[in-house]
Amino acid sequence: MIRNLLLIMMPFLLFNCSKKETTLNSKSPNIIIIFTDDQGYNDVGVFGSEIETPNLDLLAAGGVQFTNFYVAQAVCSASRAALLTGTYPNRLGIHGALDHTSSHGLHLEEETIAEILKPMGYATAIFGKWHLGHHPDFLPLHQGFDEFFGIPYSNDMWPNHPENKDYYPPLTLYSGDKIIDTVWSDQSMFTTLFTDKSIDFIKRNKNNPFFLYLAHPMPHVPLFVSDKFKGKSKKGLYGDVIMEIDWSVGQIMETLKKLDLEENTIVIFLSDNGPWISYSEHAGSAYPLREGKGTSWDGGVKIPAIFHWKNHWEAGLVQPHPAMSIDILPTLAKIVGGNLPKLPIDGKDIGGMFLDSHNQSPQDAYFIYYNRNELQAMVMGDWKLIFPHQYRSLKSGQEPKNDGIPLQYRMMEIEHMELYHIPSDPSEKLNLIHEKPEILEKMIDLAIIAREDLGNALVGIEGRNTRKPGKVL
Image (cartoon, rainbow, N blue to C red; front, side, top):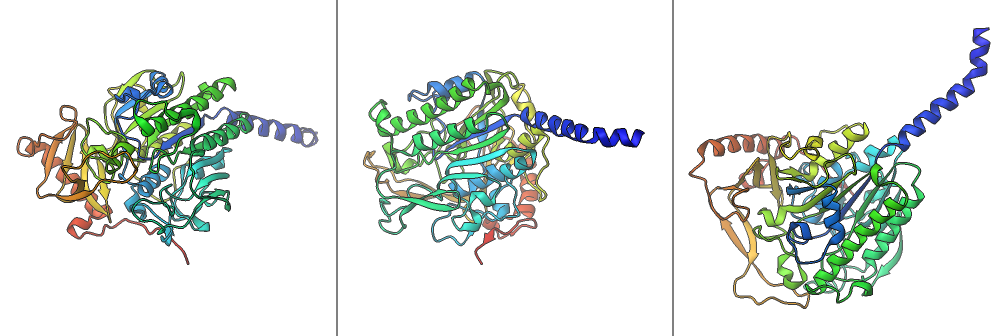
């Protein structure tokens, strides 16, 4: 009798188990990462900008503003690999900025945020710039994303490049794995188009958890803006572009409010690296930080970072302690109860940093690489150690330009280690290498471990635990 009763009840029990699982998944927080390109530390109002960014300022007021948030490298592809995998990009064999000649991309065995969330019932999409391999096997639909609408690499990788004219092929626009259009001369639709695609995705998935990765190609050069923001800023075309990005953030947040999703949606705003300062008035500002994109000074690797989760994280919190983009994947995995990637990653859960400004990252230190696996700097708490290396800096005596043609760089040489106390010296001007021997010793010990693990081309060490990128067969 009991057996017969169980057989009769089985469909009902299965239905209810399924329904309970669906209900739990529907309550999992939605996740939105807005990732801009080459936006400087000083290009958001709450970080000191004169450009009007009311929506980003409002996002910060209701969320957590990190004033010392780092990317793993100050260059496009490497920075994106770190964000999406929670791993130092040099561990993955991703360096620099991939282009149309690159025969490699993010290895399919590496797991992205999308691949962590998708098994948990999340719909996943990327709109905008990918830049982790343009060959078919490396595109987003093979890395955990259900939808992709955007461009395969940077928006200046087209025939109209100011210094390499006709070197790059036409810039293609993808929908999924298919090329649907070619962008010949006008990119003014990009910010609004990718915003509209994002809003449509949110609306279509309002009843189930979703992960949206909105990777704006702007404000990377060449700068383009829609007519509705042309001439609106006091900071010229660059300011117009930032205002449209701010508008985009406002549109996303307004959509969440209308759909009653704001309290159940994590919104993260970041830039991939600092401003490309050689483009002068077509570039942003990293003030008061030193240098910009393509360097391991804070102007290159420190970014404006805002984290918002209404009624979950401390509204208006200003977090002064350092963290890095590699920590985002494990933090999100912990929040949603997801599994970490099977291969080792470098990020750690920083969830406590969103609740109290005194809470610090569990990382012992952060290591900043550039070029072909050069360990150029590291951050440990309040301290930053610079290792001997070459870096680019603008040649002196050049007048600012507003024509989209870059100024000229010169190579600078750091011959000895330099130590900076970032809270009191954000511009990295006062070298304290001889004043803090105990700090220096601890940082060198950690750097030795990092070199053995990840390698360091500056001293000829390959590293024991690096992995290969995916390769075209």
